[in-house]
Length: 472
Image 1 (cartoon, one colour):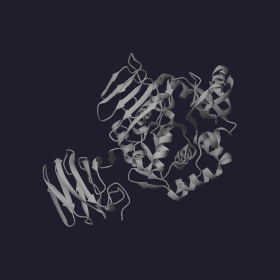
Image 2 (cartoon, one colour):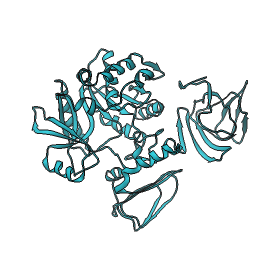
Image 3 (cartoon, one colour):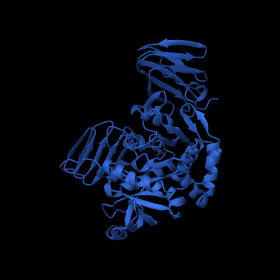
Image 4 (cartoon, helix red, strand yellow):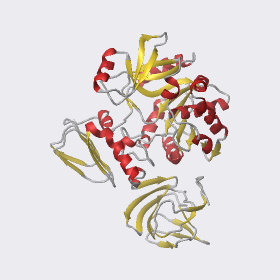
């Protein structure tokens, strides 16, 4: 049995401002009409003897992940929630330990949720060779056949000769090289790009982890032993996982083990690790431009231009990236697009919310979009899904006015329960318990006007919640 382990916990900061911590790149439809997570899950469904996927994600993304799986008809996935990111070695250990607890020792196919693979046939062939290696105790890494002297990827050096099932002995992992070194790697024919994709039996990985990273294994055992069911999710023990070292599978195991094998993959792979990388995998027009959204150009060549909310007009640019969202505009030369992470670091230092939230913020009950904001008031457009309900809550620092613009709202305000319809409104005083419910079969939309001296999203005291969030 092969269990796909989908690692969906990344932040994707190099694709800011589209990718943000509350809605990272693996949950975005960047290349097709489906998100990268959805494409990853669909890609593996035709693998022989494949089991239901095991998805490991940040606890803040749990409802988004579950909804995206539901949208593609995947209802049997297990979703394990990480209290915080600890890199790939603990994530794979958690998967292996959890499955061993079920009394099985499956072959794990460990895949990041934010990669793109264009040639599914070649991917399937590589997986078939990897299975043969994994089933005899080897730890397989998939090495991407390099197309160019790339300085943005780590490399894996091989012995240069195949074993009996089309794998190559791993000699060493090397860090991202400079241009001259990358050219030598390419010319030698012995080096592959490090894809971050792996295959191994659960027991084989845990045995190597016990040898080379015993503290990771121990803390992951504690975290799994203390795991609890939370609605449709599996929540790790927070304290145990917090004490687990953060490390990658490469550093913790693959660079040390004597059982590492590389299976080549030549399938149009990309980790979409920057805006220029995304541009490379998109179809360009005759001027070399990739245009998405409402974009008009004049004398523009070799650019990636994306408009999310309004008309984007661009004149006289070459080899640039321009990305417009409702609250941010990014302009960068393609050759410097990897430095977006420096901007994100700067914004984080300034405690700017633009690194975390879009104007439209998704919640398990629906979403809200910020329309206007001042120091003492803000206006939101709130959409509540059919049958959904916000938590029973109270605000200590603000009052709210609600105006229904679509549907019928059931309102709880103190001891009262009543309905309001289109063009009707109600007032929620500061400090009063309240709840908004959509009991109908169509979306409910309201305009909410908040007033108060503090308007932060953390000013919520919950008393009851259908989605397992913290209550008072």
